[in-house]
Length: 341
Ligand SMILES: Nc1ncnc2c1ncn2[C@@H]1O[C@H](COP(=O)(O)OP(=O)(O)O)[C@@H](O)[C@H]1O
Ligand SMILES: [Mg+2]
Image: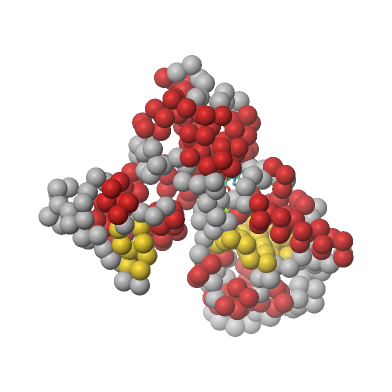
């Protein structure tokens, strides 16, 4: 249940909550100081010159604020964001439709842009090259028809991806601005938790917010989700207030340990160590062993485990570290014959 909540919290964001808690101004967007500064400067400079912004690619694990930033950029530019995502653009005609329906100044946001079909991707290039004059001809393939598009002036494309490594070089290079979001420091997340608590009228003190923050895998979306779960606990098992001790009890009940690892994280580490003798193990075998999709493993779980030093990624596969043996209370050599089986 705990691991469902984590993966679920990342894969399927609670749309209503996301909107309530989503900052709409750069000044409300906590952390990622360098990314924020570079984007703010690019926007202001473009506005001063009266020129369009360069296309922007936002890269990073789920829940770190890519969609939020895209919306903030649109608002700062005084324009609106038209949302779509790689997997929902099934035919070149879908893309053509999107581009024709853009009004002057609109920003097109393509989420999960690495999942855009390569054949469709090519129709994006001319539009990205010069949104002012480009025409798109669609007259090939199974859905052959001839369309000529004249997208209005000054369109900007913002792409978001959890896997920029999967983007083709021609697409990647067409984004002049590429920013990578990293996991948040606990202090930044604490501010995010405190802000969300205020918006949701949850009574928390700084220590309570910090306890949630430091166990949220550096991820604002998880911090917000955990805050709500901790509130439930506080209302049922406490007096509604969230302090550090209560947050600790609530998170323990949710099986999120003191380092912020959840059940799935531990299942992954245990599989690498016990089933695969500490590794190296390929992502597909590991995914089968823990009953998760390889993509989810790579996009959601591994980046954090690697950053925290629990896993190493080598050319041969994933390898457990000293730290992960310690986390599970195992010694190197505890493997297939180890005591967990
Ligand atoms: N820097 C931030 N400051 C405050 N809240 C944030 C920040 N980044 C993300 N969030 C919160 O986390 C949620 C998830 O962010 P989102 O932009 O949807 O992530 P992504 O698109 O990268 O998966 C948002 O709804 C917002 O409430
Ligand atoms: Mg998003």
